Image (tube, rainbow, N blue to C red):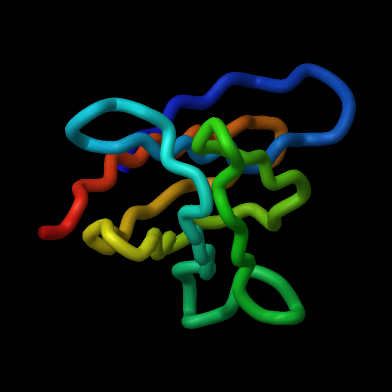
Amino acid sequence: MYRNCQVIPDGPSIATQPQVNDALTGEPVKNVTFEFSINSNGAVASRNGNIVKKSAEKGGFVIKSMQDGMYKVKISKNGYANKESTVAVTNGEMARLTVKLAKTN
């Protein structure tokens, strides 16, 4: 787990900002699927189920307004090895999640 937080003084909180790069080249990887589920008591990240997002052209995205908690994150993309990680979300802080994916042969 990679986590780096900074306090957001006023305004809406930013929950998490993942970034995914190729493990060999360091280049951003787009269209990587991130699935967030809350880790406590088997509850899910939102009332409608897990939060699922894909990385953009530069390998990242931002999710605003997640409930506080420790999230399990499943990371996947065809042609790359799947990964799992965790990220802690706390109101008023931005949790950064940096992932390096290795290509499969």
